Each structure stands twice: as C-alpha cells, then as structure tokens.
Length: 161
Image 1: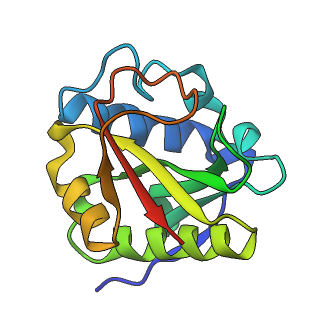
Image 2 (image 1 turned 60 degrees about the horizontal axis):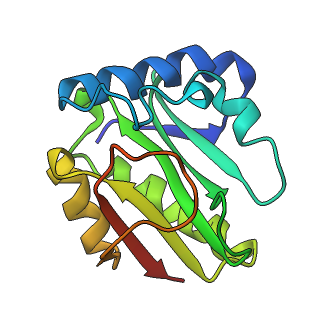
C-alpha cells in the first residue's frame, strides 16, 4: 500500500476537502439538499472543526489530499455524544484500508476527549461506507439524533466507545 500522511486540517485544505466531499456525493447521487453537499460548512471545514473536542484529519498521498474524516460534538446532542463527520475518500484511495485508519484515529480522539458514544448519518447509496461502519461496531438506529440539518440522510448509526 502506498504510504499516506494523515494530519489535522489547516485552512488551506478547505477547497480540496470540499471538492472531495462534493464530487463523492455527486458520484453516488447524493448531491442534493439535506446532505453535506448543500451544507455551507463543507466549504470551511477548518473553521467548523476549530472548536474544543473537535478534530478533522486529512489524508495525503504524494502531497495531494485524497480524503478526510472528523469528530465533532453532535449538534443538538448530549455532551457525551460526538459525530463522525465528512468521511470521504477519492476513488483511488478506497479499498486500501485508509478509511479504517481514519475511523480509528477519529474514534481514538473521541475517547480521549470524553465521548462515550459516536453517531453518524449515511444513506443506502453509500453501501461500501456503511459496511465499513458496521465492521467498526456501529449499529443502526430507527431515527436521527441531534440537530444536524442533514435531512437527506436516512440511515443513522451509533457506536458505544
């Protein structure tokens, strides 16, 4: 496997990560209202994650950003629940274990910062991602948690940390 560098986001990364999020959602037919595609924070992830108990990781190959994932307090949720957010990889970065590495880093960060549960929102269109989440022990919920504004996602998952 090609060597990857994973580091925390900086403002200069915002355009590249926003592009990856939006092109991935478009690839899977999720370029619609109520998803990260139309969420204005997607264009400024370095600002969104510049708060206590939040962290966003970017993955690079040969100096080029190829994906990322982050942990953020669940908007409108209890203090002990975080959300795995903006987990997206370019097509050439998929299927190589990078998603698992990013998720592991995010969950480790969550535990170190006092979270006891991690929530995420996804959709049937993102079947490969859902399988990865299942492998990490996320279980399906019957409805959404918090107030994320992502009404375009109709699958909700939670993991005890």
